[in-house]
Amino acid sequence: MEVTTTGFRAVPTALDAAAAELTGSADRLATVRGQLTTPAIGTDAFGLVPQSQRAMQAHGNSLQRSSTELESAATQTRRLATGVTAAVANYRRGDTQASQAFRQLLGGGTTLAAERAAAPAGAAPFGARIAANRSAITAELTAERQRLAGYQNQLTGDPAVDHRLRETITRSQARIELYENVIAEHRKILSFDPSGDGSMVELVGDIHAGTRDVAVFVPGTTSELANFERYHDAAVGFVDAAPRRDLAMVVWMDGDLPSNLFPQAPSASYADELGPRLADFSHQLRAEIAGSAAAGNDVQVTFAGHSYGGAVVGTAEQHGLDANRILHIESAGMGHRVDGPEDLRPAQPDVQRYSMTAPGDPIAWVRDINIGNWGHGADPDEFPGVVRLETGNYADGRPLEGTSAHSDVLTYHSDAWWNIYQVFTGGPLVTVPSVP
Image (cartoon, rainbow, N blue to C red; front, side, top):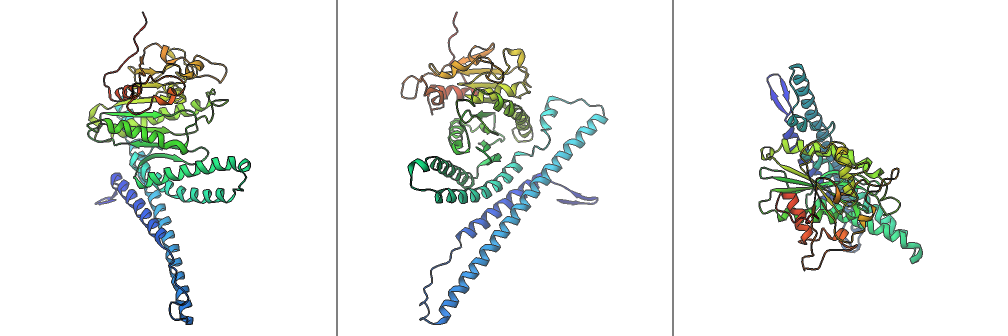
């Protein structure tokens, strides 16, 4: 807050910094608490006299009090950080609403740039989200460790009985590793929910003065928190490949995706739920770009959907997805109820669309199916205006084909990987020759 002659003026950027500092302080307090241990003091440390036992007990009590006080301080500090994060979001929302009201009073029209700057209600800036989610993940790490201990205590030693429980333990361990990595590497989490299979949205790289391209990757069937790291690692590979550090990526898994190929994957219900949410995020992303140092760079935004993620992206297009480029990677389809270009209503009228499907990928068998709530619309490879891209070979020269190619198109430095990277950065592409 800044004091003025008429009262106080809020400085949102300073509040963002304060929230981040409070979160960091809470993390440091939690770390110190975790380092408090009671050293083993033998009862004969002071010559087998009663004072030795009392000294040991007093030392242990002192450490316990310190641990309790540190835990309380860390909890209160995180509450402060959450309150500041909410306050700054309210300040920014109020500024946006006030400016819109004044434009209406003055008879001003709303430009596309203004619409992008006004993110959907309740959408906090990325910096505030990152600080809040760091606190949430730190708390969830403690809870997940406790759950894991409970699962391990339930093991009976009978393989037949323990099989499903061991799967649960494996997923829990994977979540713990994810949370630990997020905290240790100060990763930028924009959304987080541990319930069910879990959901997470992560910004990889930065939106800064040098940013020219941002790519949003939507994964597909069986994606959950327990395997989120594979998509994070893939995004890091793409971001690191940009020599001028001008590419940022978002791994977008902001809700439940199908857990199995049947009966869940054929259902459009997951895409119907996630599509509008992804479209909203596209406007929030534009607002973040507009408010950043990259605002004047004409940043190009790509939305890429892999497998079921392609159906999510296609559904989002029906709800006004704001994208410059769309990429369907081994996609389930253009989106439920999408039969032709007239069924898409993107925010951008000149969207460039691309598709890649490796030879022999069985995903091709389930396209062009729409039965009730089953099916994901038209085949992206055959859709009017979509440029079909080659998947080519692995880096060692082997052809990238067959069932395994469904996921292997993301294999680092394969021909498919390079083609995906070129879409993300607006580079030269290797396309499938058109059939005369």
